[in-house]
Image (cartoon, rainbow, N blue to C red):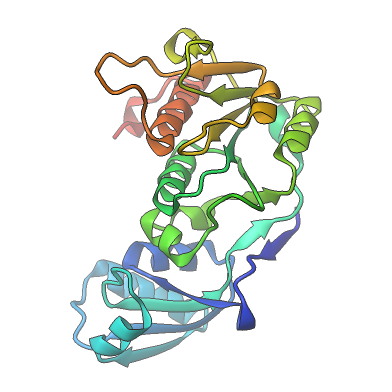
Length: 261
């Protein structure tokens, strides 16, 4: 498996912020870290101490500055912590045959453009043990510091690959042993809870407005929909996709009581 950094512009550096995001980035240790900056007077607790210890272990320089300095550098809710690091590391190649043999799960995103929806889906993907996330190079939100923060750092532990042609990639994945389930909200789709989605499986979630593109939908072996009992006709992509991932997890193996929330 090969990886490459995200395209983040000159210098290939970005500012990660927020305690969970920074902690998970340091734990994953997939980026190149330049500097950890803490706000002066930040309240000491186990999480802050752990972040400092991790940074020291990674030989990262640590600075303390007035909170106003961080406020000027980061517009998001930084909680007094910023980590300067290289861009997000995407996967370039992946052994789909091995993942299929291991009964793995893949999440494919067909044009999810809202960063908050992307973050929610990636957080759920990590929580449900997804082995790979696939997203288009174009017409898609990217993994930015805001997405890392909104996912509580979960994205740092995921393997994500960007593809030019999602349809062609899905066809290749099917040859490698996966079957493909798309999520839609129309009458032609089968009810999700009446359908078994045992891995190895790829769950495809469409864009917030248009849903699955026609050629992507045609590549699916099955299209499922969530039952709707209220007046609202659909859920957003993040909610629907998250429910789908947990349904796959339920189909794959019963949840041990010790693993339950």
